[in-house]
Image 1 (tube, rainbow, N blue to C red):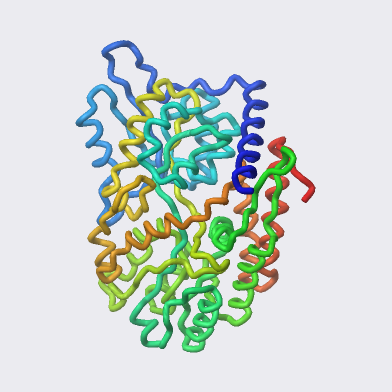
Image 2: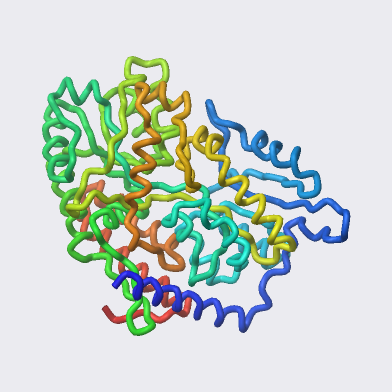
Length: 439
């Protein structure tokens, strides 16, 4: 049963945290929130990875709205320009040094591991005040071991992007199932067009999210131990789909964040792809001012397990770092920030907060006036409710990408990525001192 399984996972995480905190003094960071004397201005540091792009409301402008209306609680926002893994390492070092910010952007896949390492505060009491402001699935993403460590900001359901004009020219209808997607990909490839991209650098979260959409549950609890199953029937169905697409040369194999990918998009060779919701804000920027501008559309992810369901690829929340001296004020700002749905949507994010989201002007232009956020919101409601990550999942994804690069080069099979994911997951758990079931 799902509830029993997730309760088991929660107990495993809680036990790990208790074990670590019993032998660690925890962080002593004040996060610039140490000014607690009556009448003094509280200053909260917020570290994030949000970039300011075309048509986006600048982060500084959003923060200014808060600071102008909350003179006694001032927020200092700093953008971390490095990789997510580098930011996580910095936060760990800062907590140990007592210099961590009060608030930090944390990916949902990062939160369990950071909590187990005693880097995040338990803000369950504060979070409960704001629970009704968020969708239940997004709110649960910031719950680790039954403890809330912050609040969700955005979600990343997988959707399908496609060039409607090119599809019409090829006589291809928008696929509703993965079987239809494969056949359409073969038909397009015969005309030197591609409606699929196998992306080695995004294999970790991308393939796991597709497995979730197929109904897979990679991580659960059995007899107070972690159970890892990355090679089950549902996951194998995803692997088989991609292997057939690659064997038929019906999918491009560029890294998502590469010049080759951008060139394929700009040249009109790539005319469709699976993508997470958070890519919407910038995915088509290269097409602005070209003949392809306004031709693309968004559809729900084709089904692979029968039910209309999708999986989570990315998304993040704002966590309260260990040692924050003002958790109440930090969470008040946290909730305010994450409920600025118009500003977040203008940044291309799918807000985790409840409420209708108006499709931004830039998105309307790039997607031919389609009400994109209506589709994204519906997809967000269809994210698999059984999916959760293990502590240390970010350590698993690089190994999956390494094997995916071998797949793209033709020296490995897609199913090998699933095996690597399982082996790496078990080793990661063992390295963290967490119990792992034999099967």
